[in-house]
Image (cartoon, rainbow, N blue to C red; front, side):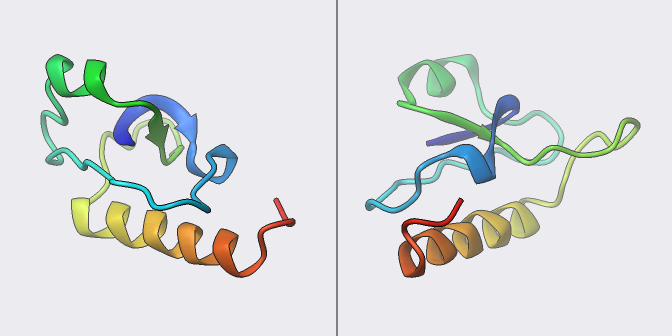
Length: 76
């Protein structure tokens, strides 16, 4: 699963199974080649005017959501 500003909001993605997360840097993100190979593309929606989120914070949010889904698999 790759991160991109135009991906599916992270809370709509199924993170209950083992998942490899590929995070891009804050300025240029992931290359088109990497995005093409990803089975899913996920985003963290932000308010307009905000260009990027620190990669460490992105990873934290995605891992937290994965743990939440795995502990409560029937809640969205």
